[in-house]
Image 1 (tube, rainbow, N blue to C red):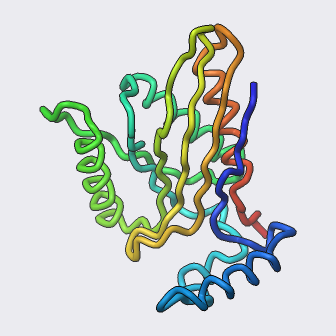
Image 2 (image 1 turned 60 degrees about the horizontal axis):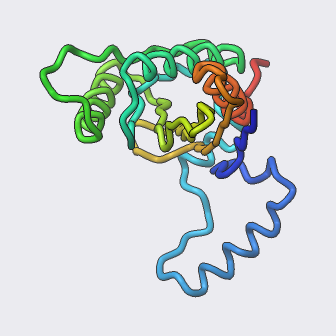
Image 3 (image 1 turned 180 degrees about the horizontal axis):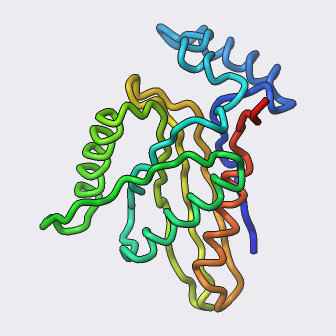
Length: 197
């Protein structure tokens, strides 16, 4: 199985050797972009060294950009929760989807996400994680492939603290569960988590 778990890994540039090239490139871009700001916001600086492992993290719904069976989305959330715990983020609370008459769609997912954000604010949870399903398909050899994105963001400000995209492809007849589990494991492993002192 192929996993490409670092197509985009936003924030914490000090974790990568290309940081100086990135800063130079950003400086060049700022010459041509109006209002470009080099310095990180107060929120981003607060989590510069990583996400504290003891942070209460709200797990928000996955947004599906394509049709994905509901039971598969539930499975993605379970895999994510297990992998977060393995990475040291053990205090997660998943939003429970209320019963609704809305037909599952991208718009209903957005509505559910907004409800989940209000739910998290009401419980005074400041950090959340959400996923997006960007690709979900089988080819002629019954080989499953998927592309997922994970984002950790500060609920009150809406600022993204960390995000990553990844692509996973299985062997012919390999279960979607196995491909998703390996991909999510790789994505979460890239998350910078502060270990307890």
